[in-house]
Length: 326
Image (tube, rainbow, N blue to C red; front, side, top):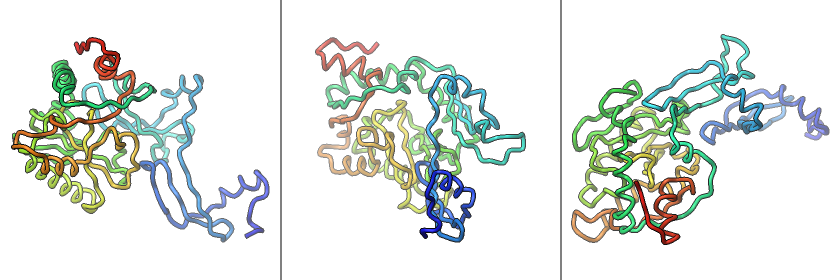
């Protein structure tokens, strides 16, 4: 081995072109990192490749959108569009066969709320008591629904948009749901599988609306989501996990279905994600009649300081000021 170990940077750089692939060992970080087994000069070698960080200087950012090639739209709904594309340095001609190296999401036109949501900002941990929910959060949810924030969801449910993306539909006023790819999934990397289950009923806005009487309904939805996911993608039941967000991005009840190998980022972290099985168990063991439910418990989660919930509700409560949600 000593004769093949590089002694200088130049020698190290010369090794990579001589790497001969044996097999793929692993793919993680939602497909952005791979580990390959191979050989160099007949000696075994491990090569890990990871997408480099984006350049953030103004010169590169200014030309970023114009450097994109082979743009392929994956879907669009209302103000949301998502794409696959290549960067120009990875696409030298019109017949480029390199796979896309970028997954892009576009919101156009975007609102101030979108800008705040996607901006880097400090986080705060808050505890939403039943009283805070009833007095402030539920009225806030109602206001957002009345402002048309769910138009894109209703477009899907009512068959006006994204029907080519609907993987499975079960139509029923009570038990109906749609299964479709999450906009952050590239739709091909099985280890980063991420689907959404949108329920058809509109009386459940979030986990807060779930009651003991909904346990059978939740179990039925869970069973069908897992059944269809395993049938469509060839994974086993114990390779998928289901969760919901609180606070959710939009106030229409939906369930996330992901491959267990998908690395748990911020969207699966404590303070954001609640396991569906844990919710069902909590409801089953909760004291009270069938009307007892998640409105009766306190929920702790994190918020960005630029979020409306922090600025309009939790910061005023912390500072003992009047709360105004309009």
